[in-house]
Length: 387
Picture 1 (cartoon, helix red, strand yellow):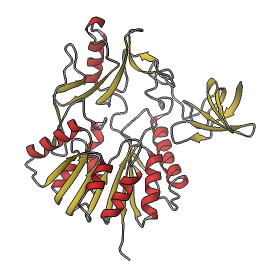
Picture 2 (picture 1 turned 60 degrees about the horizontal axis):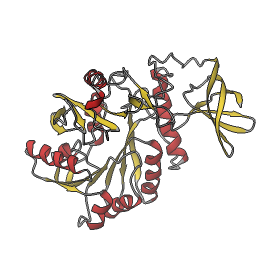
Picture 3 (picture 1 turned 135 degrees about the vertical axis):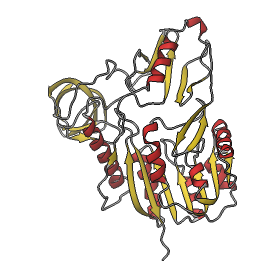
């Protein structure tokens, strides 16, 4: 079934919103103001999920996607939007989630700090591998088929070069069980996990605001290095005191600068490789006032002896913080909490609980760590004021 619709705005998750015949229509890869003929792919109650069959009248915000794989590859979903329109859409997504999910009123203007590089910015990726079809790239949109990608327009040049080398490798050199390859770049090369052929799990380093971080492809590291300095600066605004917690701490992106501002810091990270690098990064920086706990944040709170801290920073994965973690944060009664989020919906869900418990949103900043996609990084500072 086809319908003719006009896209009103972009929703959290990146879909275009339209209405037709009393039903709500979610349109993938749309631009606000598009007049479209859409194909209904799925119906769920009063909601229709659709894809574009024909662009009748393009939005003035629409641009020609430069990537030949756009629309088939599931990696990017905003290449059809001019960059300023991408930033506007992301600000509206954050506002929508804060209002609709967190029930926050009087939300101030949200400005998304642009990325200095809107192409060739990614320093981390996962390449999917299909030995049977002999394809290497990313999953196609809405499927587990591998889109064979020869040139990814958002990869840093070093990673693009390595993608070409992987693609040129003889198939008999690929391990039979290899389904995907994690890759990350640094100032001194590229790391792969798992290792095979010439592609090694090298140890890398990157300097952010004077701090040197070591890591490899087994660990998480933010994908856009051009904004990391600003991210750290905003996350640690006015943070100082005796005791701090760094939750979901990774290799210590925030742990190291926190250790220079607080008398003692506890960092909690479940990934054993990341925790190992965090300890090494602290040691190389000469910082002895931080302890890294290798456990889940939920498990750490269950066994923690800390009952009062001055500052809590959490940077959870896209799924947000578990309920037990929010309860744990409330139990330590920190006057200042900083929540670093890559998903506005789960951020809003967790903020609702913190605000209900007496915290007040003091400031909010957003950063476009993910150009050409609907994803956005948000930093929220919350304060608890004594009665």
